[in-house]
Image 1 (cartoon, rainbow, N blue to C red):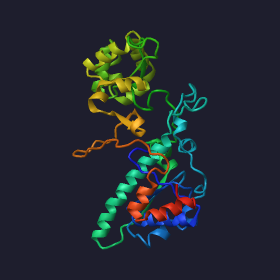
Image 2: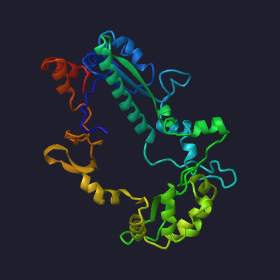
Image 3: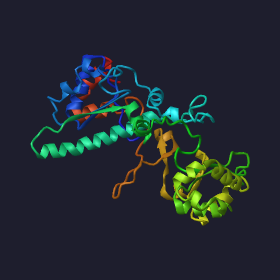
Image 4: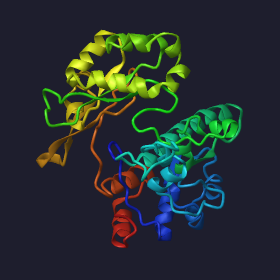
Length: 356
């Protein structure tokens, strides 16, 4: 997360430290912050304090619930916001009678809310920068505030659950490894892989298109599950159980490698459920250079693998130039280069504990 970034350590609890941050913000295009709402206002570093000095500043703010509303002052934690957005409720396994959540929800084994909010912050910042260009062309100040909420970012992933509830009174519950209202698309069990005989073996098949579904049923030797009763997705949703059972019965007789090849030959979308080991060793990842080796630690360092910088932009050599920096690694470089502080000023600030 810290790759290609510079780390400057400034004690913002001191007035001298806040002055340094203010000077940096005044020279910047974008200020991105994720303090609890109101914190920077107390330090006179909020938008109303900075925009008079830099009216073109894009001020991007990330918090749990946004800058306004009764929950604005709550601390924002991704796991909590994932729950409150409804995301956790629809991830898990349904009660067979009610279709609603049975037992505790299943969470992705990553901090999804933080990453999704980060993407919204990046997207919102780019939109603000594009709008700034138009404002400046019209002779107006180009700055604005981008208000990003972790909870709202997760809510933005929730597709149709709100209109479903509004128009049909439907409370969508979890669906295990399938997706509500789309049949068939699921994870199906296979015989243990030849290369990993002790690992769980699953493939994901997505064949909810009408012609894809017919090819799939021919491939799994169940042409009896085609015809008028299975013609369109809405028909197949009503018969999901028997369709899923037929596919699972077929995949269970084949290894992952066999099932994948047969499905690909039939033109049915299919993919293995890969662990990180298979990802790194995968031919597509290798061909695209999607995982790269990055040198860490200077002369006596080592290589570490990490995902390449995405997306790929034509004509841009985008790569990891350095891994995450040590805290304060670039303090002197930034303050001298961007603010013009000399060695004596830097030494005094360090001695006084203002910078690190």
